[in-house]
Image (tube, rainbow, N blue to C red; front, side):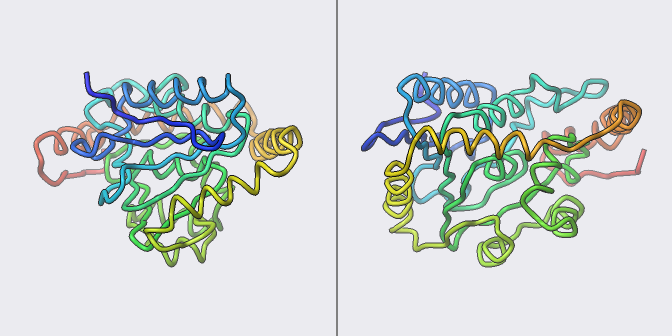
Length: 260
């Protein structure tokens, strides 16, 4: 079976490369499991920094969640144990910084993945689109919170409501991209940042990252509100629109939503 990712260690930096361009690097359960396994291996070696990238020259960094793996009606498509949710937690909980290196377009769940990374380094081909509204998917609280933590509220809403891509220059202006660099310099620039991080106290960096993670989730919500949100989400994933979006995708045609 062909590997869906490549992994290497370079100068004590773990590098994970998404390597399934024929499938647009969709975050299938198999690919997610490979990413999590690589992160676990790097963690066991206590590598202080991990770089997450795609193969060189691709037009699509990742198309996001594998739509073919989404459940049909009557099941939450983004439950706690969903593959996308598991890889997001693995990145958040990795002991040191995880840096996304982005060349090409980033869609849906992959956009959430880059938002979950600690830093994003990109070139001018990068774009970021959040597409659940195109697929009739009721995105979950943790995913929305990732965007609220990174962006002004009105910009996060624009991304979710329109599902339109943010191009690289605007993404940098809004703070999604830490550094915008020429394509040929992407990896070297990122490894230089990793080198700087590794020259600091690893223990300090690890503890600071964990504090950022805890504080970013310190968002109180009452049990009643949580149950209401879950009820609202169920209304969506039980709907005609959700079923229609998946069917239309598989049939390679535009969906016909009726709001029901």
